[in-house]
Every structure is written in structure tokens, then in C-alpha cells.
Image 1 (cartoon, rainbow, N blue to C red):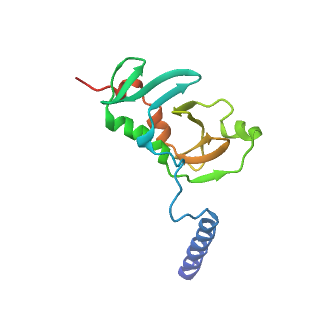
Image 2: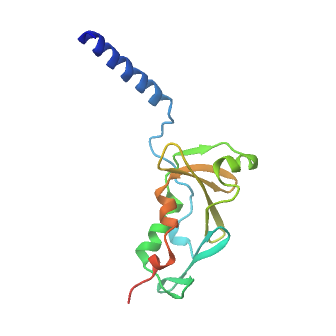
Length: 161
């Protein structure tokens, strides 16, 4: 193959890649998952397969873990969990109740309640590193790191004395 043919082939591949990337959604600043203020949340509950895994309650001294053990919780770790409320939305998906199975949301792997608002985690998606979540009847894609944070064991939040 001649050098000029290789250059032309390389340019053609770059052009195809740019055209493909141009089809992806553009957003200057991703919108947050919720408009809830993390500072206003007083209770957090994590359920896995319908079973309560973690319960946190805010009191005058900060956060208290109330399930599975009763003990002071580390503020910075609870703040990380509360960061889920402000997770950047990578994509909002049109969906109906019938689509929930497609996104792994018919039987959520994990559910979090922030006061009266519940968020459900579904399947990981392609592109890798993202996960489907359902909130108030809508389906979104957010970074999978938030699922990993929400999946941490309850002992992760305990304050060491």
C-alpha cells in the first residue's frame, strides 16, 4: 500500500469517527439527577433485593446509622452518598413501565430512599461505566460509580472511635 493511500485511509477513519461522535448527545453542562438539596435530607435508606441494608438518620450532631447497627456515621461518607442526588445525568431515556425490564429496572438491584424520594438502580449499560436509574417514572443514565458508592456495606459509614 502506498503512503498516500495509508494517509487517505487514516483520514477517512478519522472522518467516520468524528461523524459518529457528532451523533452522540451534546450537553455543555449535564443536568443533575434531582433538584433536591442534600443538606435538607434527614433520612437515607438503602434496600438490596427488598431487604433493608442501611439506614441513616440526621440528628443535631450529624448522621447516625440506625440499621444494621446503631452508631455515629462518618459525615464525609454520608455526604458522598448524598452526592447521588446531584449526579450528572448522561442521558434521559424515553420510557414506559413496559420498558423497565429492558433497563433492568423491573426488579431493581438496589433502591435508595432520600426522605420520601426513591431511586432505583437497574442494569449497567453500554457504554461501559454507566447505569440505568429510575426516578419518579423516568429513566436516566448516570455514572456507574454512584451505584458502587450506594452498594458499599453499612460498616463503611461507621465512625471509628
